[in-house]
Image 1 (cartoon, rainbow, N blue to C red):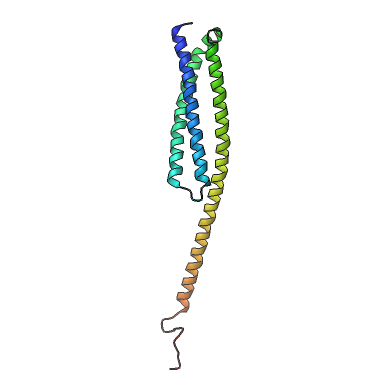
Image 2 (spheres, rainbow, N blue to C red; image 1 turned 180 degrees about the vertical axis):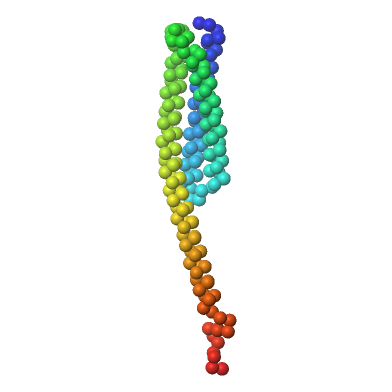
Length: 162
């Protein structure tokens, strides 16, 4: 076993640990997002802050994945040729990959729920906007009608006989 090879395998394990931490952070932000969507009044700024933070973490996740893939391509043949020498590292990586997969599934399920909550929120907002426009049109029509039917010399209390 070459020393550099051990370093690369260690870097792969470190990458998986980092990926797990990032996914945990994404899961926590997704939980916060769920709370925000379930609240009586959506805090737009907070919601956008969560979305932005998740975007940064997803970018970091992409970088970690790219680094791991390049290390794996470099080390795949070496690890396969020396399975016994890297047995503990392989088992650690397998455990991490299993945990990462479980986190990914949890995040996906929560994201699907959040998507449904967001669709409901948008539908309610659409109803409110439509109702607002209808009420505005009705009000405008009423005021326009009243303005056209009422002349200045014609007062409700004005008696023409006197």
